[in-house]
Length: 149
Image (cartoon, rainbow, N blue to C red; front, side, top):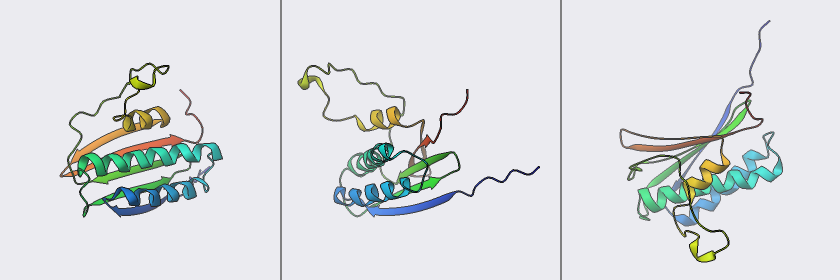
């Protein structure tokens, strides 16, 4: 018996390194999610993760300088939705799982910055970072159903 897997479908988007353009990709993420088996409640989570990754690329890799390109790919696999956000700016010196320590009862202790990767790592099932030949890529995915251990 031959088992055929559904073909993957990928959408590639490029924006200039302007924070004002990030919302365009966020809307596209929601649209792609609507074509997936994800529950509608998860669309916003996927959008937040991609928006955070784009904001990080523009803010940190390019230091908010316009005129550079940030690439995003959104791939629908049979079992997951995967995202990649790439830039050619400054790389993340150390990529490791993040943890944030603050008292949620005290508003002043909540960090104003540095939560993007923490959010992505909390929401997504897999997260990885690669910096090779001047190209930095943050990859992350969410499975439609939790993989069996």
